[in-house]
Length: 215
Image (cartoon, rainbow, N blue to C red; front, top):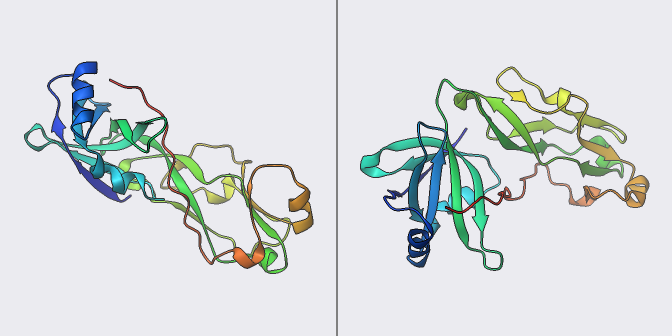
C-alpha cells in the first residue's frame, strides 16, 4: 500500500486551552494510539491534503523529528460543523509483524456486456474492510466487470485472495448489472450509472472520514 508522510511536532501540553491555541495558530491537534502510550502531536492543516483529498487508501508516516517516526493508519477525523476545517485527527500505530484492519476502495475495470446492451451498473459498496499485515494491504480492490451480463452480480466471495482477508460475508453483493427498467423502478438508494456514462475504469469518491473526539 502507498504511504504518505505528515510532518508534525510532539505536543507537551494537552487540554482545551492548549488545543484552542493550536487551532488559532492554524495547527491540527492529533493523537497516535496503538503503541505503549498515546502520542500527542500537532501538524499544519495543509499537511493533511494528500490524505483527505484522495480516492485511495494510504498508510501514514508521522514524522515528529527528534521524537521519531511512526507508521500509522488514519482512524478518525473531526470536522467543523459549518466550515471545511479539520479540527482533530486520530491515528493508529501499525507494526510490520501485526495484522491491521482498514477500509480500502473497490474499483471496477472494463465496461460490462450488460451495460453495453442497455443495462445499468449498480454499486452496493464502494469500500471493503480488509485485514492483513501492513505489507499486504492493497491500495484498492479491483474487479473486471467486462464479462458481466444483465442480471449478473459480483459477490465478496469473488474477490477473495490469499494476501488479505475481506471482513465481510461471502454472500454480500458488491455490484450488479440490472435491467434498466428494473433499476428505474427500484427504490433502493444505490448509485445508477447509465450505459453511455460508464467509463472504462472508475475512481471512487474521496474517502469519507468519521468524526473523532477532541482532546
